[in-house]
Image: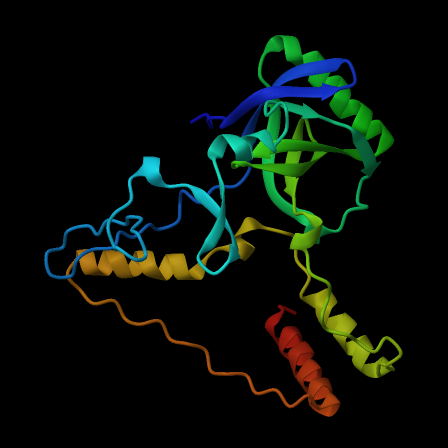
Length: 266
């Protein structure tokens, strides 16, 4: 079944413009969704905004955004005032600069989206922009209003299309807190064993490596309850004791490599 686009607009580079659409590259539709119920009546429980003092429900038309500047003191902003602070055009991805591909660390990447031409007229312009980025091994940087806020975005060629990543802002990424002594010496024998273990544990990537085991157990539990049977609780693995001793790490690596060797066919 074709995926529906949730955003339509224009991709623009200088005077070249293409009509495009965006589709989220990831989905959570397969995740289990639970409803909050009244245990006594089994009716659904509704969530409402209520006044924190009067405890009375507040209508949508009476809800307004406020920025706290003191105790019980707020600066009120209307929706149209907030919208005025955004981009002049919310429907144009205007690429204003390029950076070398791979120069932005993964920690800045937020959500991926598939960008595709919306009509036959825009295909040529879209492909020219994509191939030009490929030829120069760069990615494009632009701004766009998505999910009701202005975001910096990155455009990266991928196959016949372009992936648009929303990027985190500078104040959203924290500095690393843990400091590591880069002058600390590493035992060469320990490193050799670790390299060997890593090599033997290396496999080709498969999406099955990142399946959600909790979702699988919950679905099994629900099926069991539907059949009026109690599902057996999942057993938790025994806690791993860590001593921090290098000798123990060496022993553990040797045992791991020995187990790997025994498990492989000869």
